[in-house]
Image 1 (cartoon, rainbow over the protein chains, first blue to last red):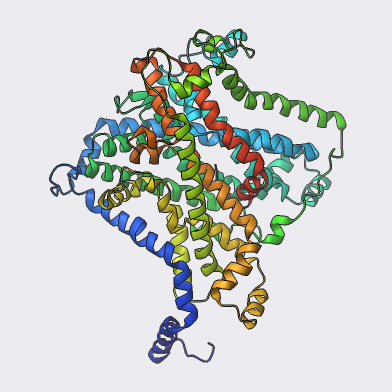
Image 2: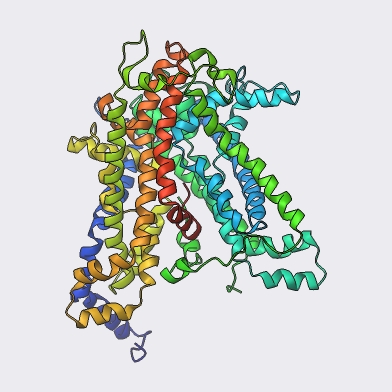
Length: 317
Length: 314
């Protein structure tokens, strides 16, 4: 490679020729044969689907009726449609509640696990079990446990003298209730953070102690930086999951006969789903999908930019 | 849904050796034993909070309708017939839920989905790990990029493709998309294949192995733990999914368990004109969850490994 002068025109041509000759190798053909399942799916179900979705978003496609192009009408409608605002607001509120709550609880549990020796394995299993529960079951349990009159949660609150709210019907309490129910599945985050905590070298703590660092300083200046990639990862995926919440909420509040339910529980992907598959406004639903894509993209980019200053990658500086 | 290319570069490289490294942990850590005991007591208290909903559900599924909400752990009246009602239908609602059929559908779709994704993703991962070919890094970047793509964006066109083929109201779309491999598992398996020493393949090649036998006789047996991770994760994902069954399944004989449960909730719930037979719905919830608990205990090691090394959630 070194013998090829890289900056001359002939050098570039030589490199292109060498690169192209790779396609004549037997190994290349074998590689593409192995890749073919993914290549096919990628072209049809990812690339093709995205192009189709983009095209559809400029039409009034509805499966049944004749399709017309409508220009940017669908995108203009997004701004005039009060349901979009409602759905976005609900989804944001829920995400803003669940992401920090999940992180704080999972970090606390994971840190406790590091302090109890081998018994940690048992508790880790216990905390993970709810993650295995089907989302429909979680949605049903939510309806029953958070029932305002007879639910277990309000029963428990009653024992300590608090009159619990009507979680499932009071618009103010729907999102906090759903977030609390989702915290039941905190075990997945616990497993990730516990694994990250176990990789923090013990001698860093010893060195910090010798330098006179107290418990809080050791947590802030050793633990947090060392596990910051895992924390950052959790924030990103929990945000993406939160913005796409569907199963539990649909189970608890929606069905085919009541496609739009109540305003308080209308989440964005539910609205998208009902527009597409209950009302068959697939053009408009495609525009909704692209708005979601944009929102998720923007939020993720902001998180990555912010994280540059906060996340410490060992070996990268 | 998880790592983009930027983070993937920094994600820990999982090798078979690293995955198998033993945890050097003591049963009882050094330091103040009272403190340790206090931590264990605290965790035990949390355990109650995590396990109680399961106990509540099992208990409620054994109660008569009027007692479901009495929040007693031991039912005053035992009514295990709720589980039979699940299969035979409740009095004066003339609906016989094909629950056994739903269980069968979920198992069969789950196994096909998990097998399909594991086999196809191993092939693709092997290509990225072993072969040297033009466009390799670009294509692998594409794999990672698809992880970031929200399912909602492709949901409608994918439905239209199946509609075009005439399979949009069948069970096929629930597993057949997995034939085309999936980014998470490609990433996971590639990491694993990269941990296999290249010399092993070179030696096999000299012994006359071709690419296929190198994959099938060397890579696959060595990567079995990672393939099991992929299988159990996808089986769980398929078993618990609600959205695809909602989109594609029309006949209730085709339903999976979650889709069927949702139908029962809509049928028996008071808001839909039922008389609130929550004891039956909860019995269904228990039956939908038990197989997942069993799968978890059988494959626990693989779940923990899969999440901890790869960051795939739920």
